Image (cartoon, rainbow, N blue to C red):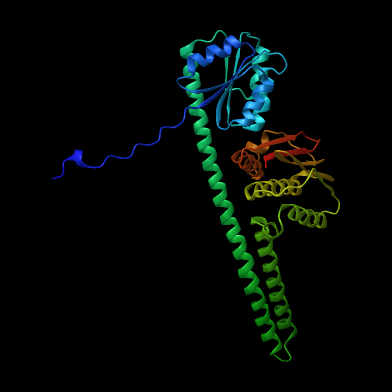
Amino acid sequence: MTDIDSFPSEPDQPKPAPAKILYVDDEPVNLSNFSIVFEDEFTILTASSGEEALKIFRDQKDISIVVADQRMPGMSGVELLERLRNYDPETIRIIITGYTDAADIVDAINRGYVYQYILKPWREDPLRITLQRAIDTHRLQKENRLLSRRLLQVAEEEQKRIARNLHDDFGQVLPALRYSVEKIFNSMDKLPSAVTLEFDKVNNLIERIGDISREIATALRPDILDRMGLMATMEWSIKDFSTRHPEISIEFEVIGIEKPFPPEIETTLFRIFQETFNNIDKHAQATKIEIVMTFIHPQVILTIRDNGVGFEPLKPLTNRSDGSGFGLRGMRERVIAINGTLTIRSKLGLGTIIRAELPL
């Protein structure tokens, strides 16, 4: 029998790099103290102002936590965290302050999506626990986002496959079926009018099956998206929508210099556009739609505004019984999965605005 010690050992797994923490404070002594206390456990980056922090955040990658003093000259901690959230919503944001103003706390939570609010003077052990929990949260968020992204990619590929099969298979079978029916009809002489009528019904049914298969394939993934790209698909969809709803005015504007879309960004923008128009078609009762595609480095921004009946912002995501709320939730999940932001603004009687900001 082989001794257990003689088995080859598993290769050592590479030790993960220490998490990066950006600490922002206008007092040099606070920056120094934070670095001295935590530099053995984490990679510490420091900035003495919000502007400097923004530059570091743009230049550095994989910053897990930003800890910011609330009251600094110029840009406040809340303002900084609010802006950083637009760059990377996954980064954990923590405010440290010597003030206990309740209004500041509420403002920080609402604007900066702050993970925790810590009072000065901070104590080493409680702060260390907070930082470690924040790092664990950040790691789980990244893992969840990667999983969500992969699931969306798999679902999109499956929809693309089904749409292609519908297009190809029905495109071959239905013309052959119609040809066979017409051949049978033409081979018969002096058919009763009732039989002729039934032949006409069969032809109409074949045509309807073709229409339905094209509608399903287009809803799954229109062929034009892969052949001609997003902008052409949007223009084609707007023309199709206008044909079905001539009473609705549609304006489409492009701002900035158009750039090619990465496939994932293109698909996400199309799904937002598609779902928004589906909701307008079913629920909005709008008479005007405004669409603006803005190219501004390093983002593309899609804004769709309608003047319809609107809705209470929370209800479409949770309480609507017609199922459309799942589409809005799906929009948000798609945008979050690729590090974008989605804003949905609506009010009863005042229409709806959908705004998606995605990285290019």
